[in-house]
Image (cartoon, rainbow, N blue to C red; front, side, top):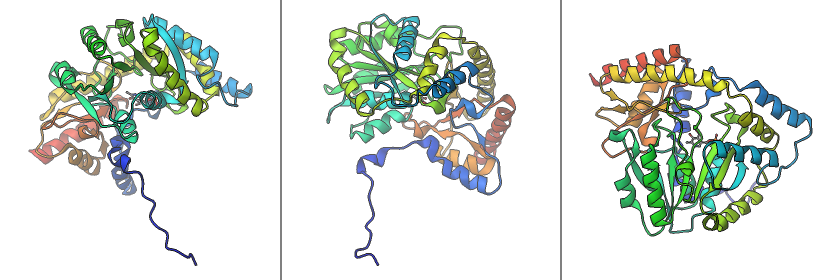
Length: 402
Ligand SMILES: Cc1ncc(COP(=O)(O)O)c(C=O)c1O
């Protein structure tokens, strides 16, 4: 018999605002699956769940590294040949003032380390709204007040400069841009990047530029890296293997520090303390970074062909469906349509799963202007699946809001 009754172990109250809507919906989907239905998954951004395959030469490189015994700890910043390859990639992106490069377990870890190394209690970081929810999760974990700036749907989801200026405080340390953006699929214009750079200069901000989808551009215009447009501004560019090289399960990402050398020196040392504290990123997979970045990029031709066709199908459906409108995505594999409905988008999404077995994610899980409602579509599934899913959503809207 225990002497005392076991008391509940409470989780930290800092975590109350940590949400990951994408995975939180899984409980509703589980209900539907338990009833014997198949769910059409337009919710998870994992190309490997659909008809996309990892380039074989990359798999071979990681496999060879394992066979060759590269299974111990790696150097904390990453193995030298991977760091050199990332520097080469930075040069191809037009970055001319690279001061440091490091490898992490996915961009998720880069985000965590880079924010943790920067922000003190009482300071804040400007994040876009809507945004990829990891940013707010990391800030909540650190007990940092959220400070989100709006993206303007009426301007192709460009950052709203006036809102950034309004939200800036003397204690704002950094601004996050996600380009191409998740969940909107938008790309920042050169003019926008220049204007953000100007703000960063005036307010001594560090810029975190999340460019994890930089090779998934669905337009003919090339991707513009923030650090190429503003070589003097302190910036960490986030990149990785998950999306561009179709290996999200490998957990390989990186940070590229650029800008005025004196300005970024102390901060970079701080990042390295954290890199050492967590020992290293996944080791054998790092041997695939060089072959990925320097080898054949042919898989991207097929990836972009499929994504363009699926984006076009998605956009046509949005345009043809009552109560739905959408800014056409220009990069990555997300669309963020607006819906004109008399109830919350979370109810919309949950009922859609229950009634039509189609899974999308509610806009309130990413952030949106008050009074507006959205949902995020991942258009990675093949055309037949998308067509079936869109027919289900259209029918749901017709039946529920006629
Ligand atoms: C904008 C953005 N940043 C970062 C990540 C995380 O990437 P990783 O798999 O490298 O951790 C994602 C994943 O979907 C993302 O969409």
